[in-house]
Length: 258
Figure 1 (cartoon, rainbow, N blue to C red):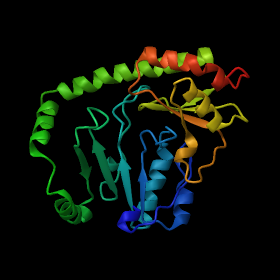
Figure 2 (tube, rainbow, N blue to C red; figure 1 turned 45 degrees about the horizontal axis):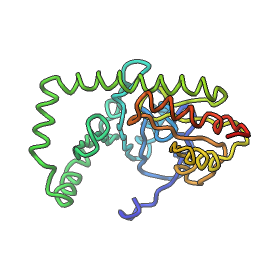
Figure 3 (cartoon, rainbow, N blue to C red; figure 1 turned 45 degrees about the vertical axis):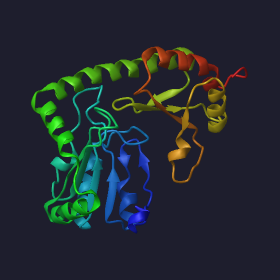
């Protein structure tokens, strides 16, 4: 954003998603959201907030940039609908197969409001002269054949099992640590006991060869309170999850032997 000459403005997020009242006060004309599984808190944008957000866009002639980065992987029901379907003239929807297939497959897509399409198309042409055609054709064949849908169903089951393994391991080794954000995606948020030192927990875990990441790294203020961890489980086996949490259980509990 800064490289494009823009000024990023942080907006608070609570248990229902982005605070639209706070957004209104910023005077911004565009906002980036991850409504299906907010990064990094993992919350789902509530229906009333969705309508409020689109109302803000219409009132201010503004645009919502919807990063739909892992909506396919939902474990508590069907994937939630996209904002773009509610206001195609106000929402720029971004998608990618980086999460569903592989980060190395550099293919994504953008659904643009009609008023922006010509300008976006020209900027794309200037930027890279186009995405590799053979890769796009291969992906199209995968989708048309039904194999992409089968792959998503299989991976949803696999990631759901890893999600369950994370719940079970924490319930056994650190039951006081509350987990949120597990309804979808590949990460959850662990709420550490009050008074815990986020960085000390991370350092102690690293000493046990377990990588943990603090929420403070993704806060604009870099505040370490309340202490929380972002736990990724997308590329860790169920056994690895169980062994990793067992290794740092005492650390997460805040036990003296941790």
